[in-house]
Amino acid sequence: MPLIFIGLISLVPLCLCLWHWMASGERCSGDVSMVKAPLVLFDFDGTLCPSFDLLVREFNAVSKYYGLKKVESHEIENLRDMGAKEVQKVLGISMFKLPFLVKKICRNISAHIVELKPILGISEVLHALKAAGYSLGILSSNSEKNIRIYLKKYDLDFFDFIYTGKAIFSKKRHLGKIRKLAGIDNISAYVGDEVRDMEAAQDAYVPGIAVSWGFNSLKRLKKSFPENLCETPEKLIETVERLSRAGR
Image (cartoon, rainbow, N blue to C red):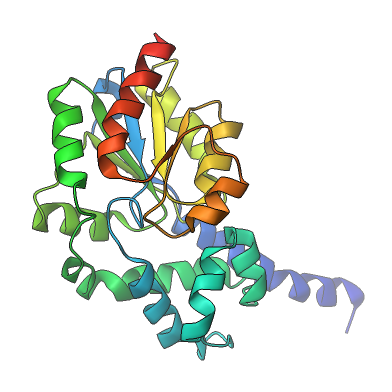
């Protein structure tokens, strides 16, 4: 077989992967152009919805299909002490498999996500921020469908828009696009529960607020030296107000 055909055939998996990334890429619902500062963005999984155990369960359910080993119960706490790329490496998830895996898990959790009650106290926080005049948005790698079902179920529909993107390591780019779409110079804060959320916020020059009740453990969050760290939802209001005043 001519070498050129061998080369073209070898590119097929890469092309399929790239096509999948584009097909399951970014989506923004809500009129972001109408959003006014101050704007506070929230991650969804782990920050608003305690979905860690559900995601582990659904990962285990599809792991055999993707040639991956299951996460054992004794390994879960160790995973919480790792960043997203460390977890990807430990579980043996290639960059080729990652987008397919994310899409599959997001689809599978739809039937179960409403069983998870919101983080205790987060509803009161969102209500208080909205009443104080803040615009609120969600930036997540989960699907818009899952997020909207959940928000409706638990009366958490305080958000002006939802921005989703399956490229889980591209939140820096997403933050920049949200700023551009909203036509505002500054995002008051991005609230998230993972090291990658805080890294994205820092790289995008957005104040980050790490919360300790989600995916990454408090120990792991502290190791990344976040600008702001909240161990209770009530602390969020005070921190957001402080950052908002500093950004004016």
